[in-house]
Image (cartoon, rainbow, N blue to C red; front, side, top):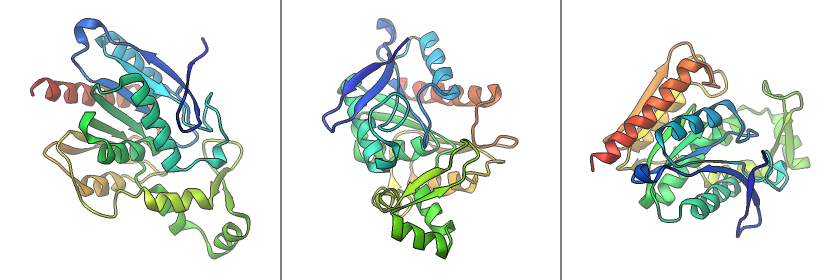
Length: 257
């Protein structure tokens, strides 16, 4: 079944799939899944959470950023800021002024945190799934002097990936914009639940990143959950259940107020 499309005011034709909640459950916030770098809305976690929300009668949205999946645009032209804007545009289109909870995977976790800081009124919680906060800084710190010279000369680097046969293209614009979107460069005070779920065996985004992120986001319900034998994907059934349980916990807190 083909996705629906929304022509955003910022020029992206955003592909999305939206499941409305049952009328008697519409008092709960909707759930929005934000995917990772070069991922798409048809991944295991995105589809699993859709099924969970359908069973619970909750509204659920998954979508593709520009240059990802079915959406328009070229991946290499995107930045954290442009993909954050895509997320904001589709959330506004679907939910308007209604409350939402964000579930962000890897890069999507970083984007969810940016949205929380910038649009806090209707965001009632965030679940970070191996959240890759400020990962562009990590890339900059890892590249060699030779790679830096290539980046300056060509405007991009091609880096090998364990998740694709072709290398990932990392542009200078992506790295420069990442500095503007950083969230770990200062402390933030929040008043909604933030749960950071991370695998202890994650070799792409080490688990200490979850601890650093929690330290930067001070709130009464900020927590880190480390899963001993899990890697970066967190797509095994037992990992998916942890994610679903934490979404349910946020909804229970929401109902308490």
